Image 1 (tube, rainbow, N blue to C red):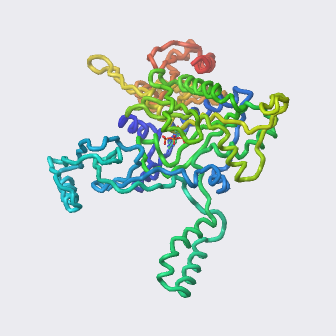
Image 2 (image 1 turned 45 degrees about the vertical axis):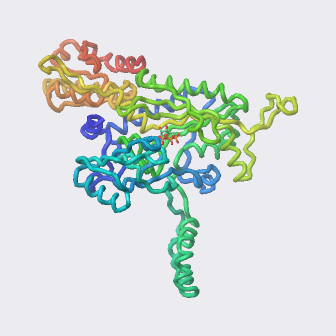
Image 3 (image 1 turned 90 degrees about the vertical axis):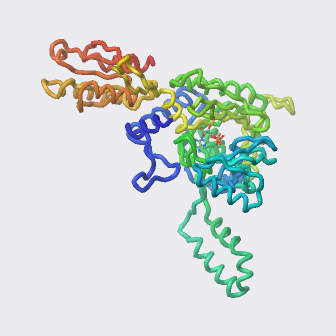
Length: 522
Ligand code: ATP
């Protein structure tokens, strides 16, 4: 994983945000190569979900929505993680993601060094914990409690109570400063009722002030599709089953950020809500789970590193009868790439109740199961394939990354990104062998043809040709076109293929078509 992170920085895929100021935890910037890769991935998703289907249309909704959306959807009250503090190392972590430990099982703790272990043992003894011993940086003798888990960092079973923590980022909308009103209220309570009364009501005064202008950054793109269900259905006369797709930024104040861009606070999602007739969800869940598995393979992820995992009954959201996760074998193990959830009519019902607007769909052809007559008005059920774009980008990088050792002397060793050609940030490197003898001019003409045709190409004359190939291998450029001494004689260039380093001569005039065809066939 470390090699991928360092390649990302070295070659301009992903940088730590605000790095010159020491970086911001869990925020990342996508550099010149990263932005292309992310766009290509998201465009592939859009093409497959929207442009190549008649039954799915797109949406681009605002990131800040009416706060009642989040009340109705349940995000304000329940979009929270159970948080725990470790009393030994101070780590704050998610209880549901902590390492499991059976009650009564040994719970050895490991601190970063001997000094910290000694200090931790002193602290535990002061807390009244007896029977513990230290061995180097380990503390032994503790047993797991009835929580069923231990600290995710040091392994300690000495933990605080679980607390709920809302994951939505709160901001305020409007020109009124809510703190001004809060200050006036505080002064009034202090003057009229005294400090004790203020102490009792301080939190409520502040909370009321903040709530009066509170808005939230969306934690998922999905709710906009539910809220716009009727708008979209009516303006395009969509017939159930149909879907609304959206991709874009989402924000979660994640407690545990992990594995580089895998889990960050600002990320991009690609989600689609597919509205179906009640009673047909099972069939559509099956359909979309398979379709999504196929798509991840189509854009280059290895088949043996993808699996579909059905949620156990204790994992399912309370409204979901079934959910399948598309999981990818990341360097740290299997983890979620996309969730395909059957959500019943939960969301449309919640928004109907909260907004008092009827969100039903009328199908004149369907038979109403209650009356047995033609014409059925119902709330559609929903299948939701919800994928992470930035998480998908990480999976694509992990899958593509390879270090090839070369021959016995290490000759030919290289690092290569075997990205699917359509995901590759640069499709073709256009390289004059040397910066003279008319070669740059021909190379620039070829590059111009590529620019005009909308095929991403990079004219590149810096350094020796071997170095340039190596650079393009590292960013995953699938094809390089080299203009050399023979080009002027026979109007041909060398095309070099990234994956097997094969080289062929092709006509200059055919270069664009050859690359276009290779991309289309990939
Ligand atoms: P997880 O269990 O990993 O927290 P989730 O089940 O909460 O994910 P969903 O709400 O189903 O995730 O969101 C759909 C997809 O969005 C996920 O499958 C994942 O790819 C992506 N995603 C969710 N949270 C994050 C995040 N903090 N950073 C990057 N991608 C994320």
